[in-house]
Structures are given as C-alpha cells and as structure tokens.
Length: 408
Image 1 (cartoon, rainbow, N blue to C red):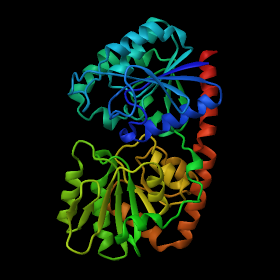
Image 2: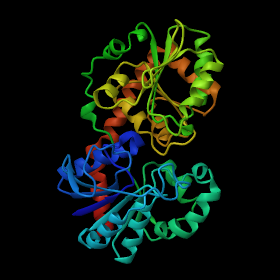
Image 3: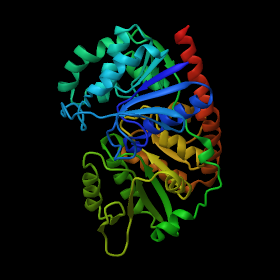
Image 4: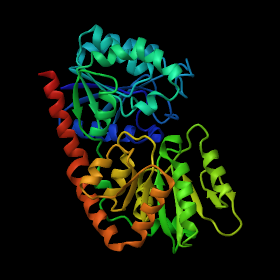
C-alpha cells in the first residue's frame, strides 16, 4: 500500500504539539509493517533541520518539506501556507498513491490535498485533530465560517472517512456538523519503549536543584489559552497556602505570547518564578514556579519521571498525548473533562477527572497528594490503560485495518 500523508507541519517541527509527534510515531511503525509512507508538508517551524523541496528519509518515512508563502496570516498565526511546489507535486504524483491521509484543516496544504483527491477520484481520510470542536469552531467564527462554507465543507463531505481519536470528538464534532461520512475512531499512540521505567527519577532535580525535597506538579504542553493554565495557577495558589512542599513545573513552548499572561497571574498571587527558557527571573529567595521552555527526548522523559502529579485542566483537547505519556511514566494524572480521553480514564479509574474550574482542579491535586493508596491505584491502572489502548504498535495495526476497509 502506498500512503500519502498531508499535514501543514511535521517532525522535527514538534513544537506544534502532540499530534505532530504522534503522527510521526505512527508513520514510523507503518513503514516497519510494510506500508510505503510519503509525507507532504511545509517547512514551517523546521528551522533548517532538513532540506526544502526535496525528498528526505526520516526514520524510514519519505518526507518532502515544501517552501510556502506567508499569505492570509489572519487565518492562522503562520498564514495559509500557500505552496506552488506542493500544488505541482500533487498534480504530478497523486495518482501513484493508493490512499491519502489528511491531518488537520484550516490550511492550504490540507485544503488543496482534498481538492485534488476529489479531482482524481482518490480515496482520502481527514483527521481534524480536534480543530472542529464547537468551542474552537466558534472562536473567531467571523473568519472561520466563510472559509468552512466555501472551502472546507465540500472536502469534509466527500472524504471516504473522518478519523477521530476519541468517542468524545465524534459526539461533539460529527453530529455538530451533521456529517454523514464513515467514522474511524482510533486513538493517537505513543512509543512505550521510551517509557521503560529505567529513567533516573532524580535527574530532574539534578538539573534543577531548587526542586529538591519538593512535590512536583507538572504541566507539559503548549502554553496557550486552550490548556487552562489560568485555572491551574489559581488552583496552585490555593494549594500553596496549605503546604510549602509543592512546586509547579511548567514545560512547553510559548504560543502567541501567552506566557506573558501566565506570568502576570503568577505575579498577582505573589508566586515567584524562574524561566530557564528565557533566563527570566522574578524571585528573591523562594521560587514557587519553574518554566523550563520546551523539552524533548530524554529531557522530556526525565521531567515526567521526576514529577509527582501531572495536571492538564484544558478547555479543549481532542486527545491528550501528554496525558498518555504521563500515565506511561507512572505519574498520576489530574485532567479536566474537556480532554478527549477522559472517558477512558474514568472507566479504567486511571486518574482524576474534574470539571475545568479552579476548585475542582485544586481538590483533585490535593486528594492525590494526600492519598497514597489512591495514587498507587491510578498509577497501576494508568499504565495498564496505555499498554492496552495507546501502544503505537497496536494503534498502527488498527489504522492498517481501517485503511484496508476504505480501499475495499
């Protein structure tokens, strides 16, 4: 099977979040299982890490990073990503592929991919990756609605199937848009070999000595409005009034300057912080919050391993790759019921699921800190859940089966 994957940004531009990482993990395993995978993407966020407008091999995956022009920046922060080279490649090569897998929407690469698939009658699957959730859809609706009606709607309607990562996304997206397509519900996956349990849990505190003797509350993800960092800061401010042995560790890259708002809230509550990403310090002696900037590879794994509780109080999250990674690292999790995999966690008693508000997040963190038996239970259940549902090898098998059904 020859599979073409179209996505606006791709590994190693992993600063764009978990879905980019999850897709590359998937493609790597698909190649190992005999699928011929080609990726068409743009060089956004690439930072010179790979050649542009020529095919390169990354972990066996054939990738072409097309140069793009910054047009229509009002649509997304990096523009519409218009690319003549991508357009030309699709015209010349699309017929050679058996199936096309289009990831996310609201960009030129994914829109033109669907257009040529319809033109050449090529079966294609669209994976919106949460971008069509009602709350996100209505955010800046003035610019999204016309684009959806005149550009995206037809591409969605004519797709062979829509791939959702959770039941929650199907319920809130497919029915909301009144789509009639076949649905595929397969989660994102993670490479469990990275979370072997052999990581030194003390490495985090060696790197950041002021974390010694502290209970580490970890947030890991892009720093933007969706993640509920305003809720987390308020909940942490409540918690720190009761105990001095806790420390908030914020791992992730800033998005659209949102980190300034987070630091502003910390100052309002008198919480001193240090930002290792920018060497930005706002403290005299007692540091309560640490920003590390983006961590990847071994450093990211060590951040999980050295933490006591992982918290993600998102307002909107179609899956939650970081949640799966935390559970794989045997870290108890507190998440909001806006995180797509919350039903899996509830059913399996694999973590604390709370409403996205300050008091409930505070109570969830406090309960896990105080109840050792509960922590042990959710850690065991969380690791089991990841092994059963989110192991990338099992996810790849399900995707191959779904691809085969579409082609048949």
